[in-house]
Image (cartoon, rainbow, N blue to C red; front, side):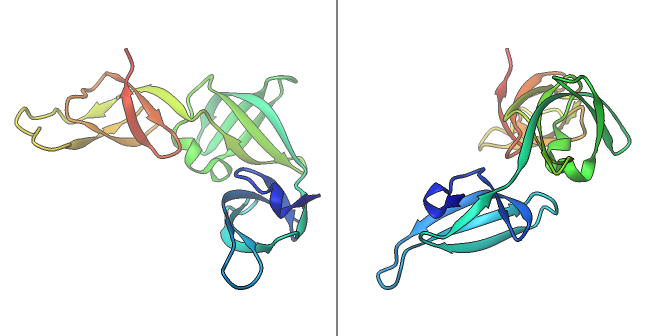
Length: 186
């Protein structure tokens, strides 16, 4: 059993017979009244995000979420086929389960798949990926008065705002959590 003092980011808990993951939390001690922990929770089955307060000392049970390492083999339509790193079994996971992670998945990418009661509920991808730009507008020489950016398209179809000096065909590093440009890869 977990108590409110155990709450931290990415903690998986079972509330109302559903698995939830802690997205954000804040310990609040008001001037009057008892202290509590304000949390933002995401339902691992539906993706619903809710805010919920827990009184100090309240307990809840851990979610029985299994973690397995896997590698993306290929994608076909809205299904992505992963191979388990231990058993070498292949399993399809739909784009709905992957969410925003689908924008950054490339073949042979290692991922962590979370299973709840035998079915995949979420996929963790690396925080940073390196991708080649497949398309972007050319930068105009006189447009450098401010931190101007332009849209660049990745091989997966995702778009990222990049500085004007970046050109098509260059390999860049992208933060997958925020979809932001981090720098060129040398």
